[in-house]
Image (cartoon, rainbow, N blue to C red; front, side):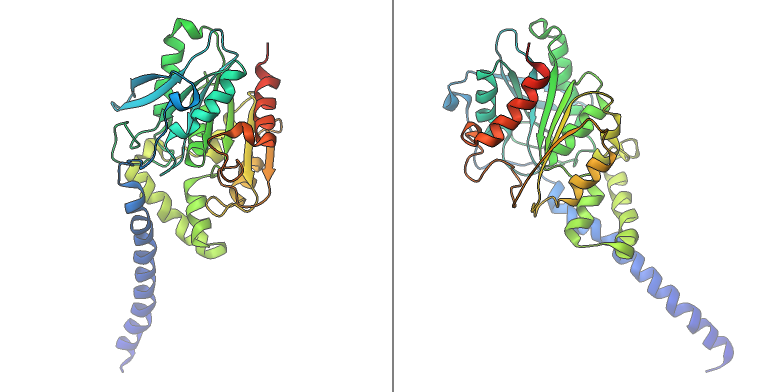
Length: 308
């Protein structure tokens, strides 16, 4: 092998390896996420307010980007606050929160259960992972603020899993929201993506830019930096309650630790032992009053800030 050919080989092989590595890293996010987000979730199981002796009003609200979204309003006269419920990425339907709405109604709180875009009866064919769903929350907040029945009524956003991340993003983006309850939220989509890949150190540092590049292209650069880790810093002095289980296998506990690291000092927290992604004890999510500790924690937070 002559000197010139050897030099080309010595340069070409490393460059080829680098280009191959870049191609692999760039391909991973769309391959992993495609079937996860490019769909409309049709729930195999939903619940009705009547099962909980409630008479909810079905709402159809239009978001700023033109989607019709469905929500269910459980009203009471002179509510202490109105709570907006948000559910997870693929399950359950937000109608699983009617048991929570029943519990809160008994304590003097109104509720609006929001089925986010691309879920259930709401429009949309792409799950936006929290980058756009604050627009769904905004539509509900606008409805509340335009409704004379809710004059001066505080607004609380209460989410689970992806809904917990959306709840944090919503309170960061929407100053009219007065308080936050977030359960099992991820600190940012790229964080939980890498956590569930088992990526850390140099591997995580190499993969993260490609995750962010893909979500930026897919959801728009205007939404690129909307993530719970940053939005929680916009809380100001508004009350917030962050909840996680230490053994969560869907959204690892490290996400909770990152959120607390970035959150204002006054934020209240609760950690449950075990793998309880839904936080409520196994089998009791539909009837949360039966999980006494859970009910006491949630009502204690709400009544501590919104009791007359």
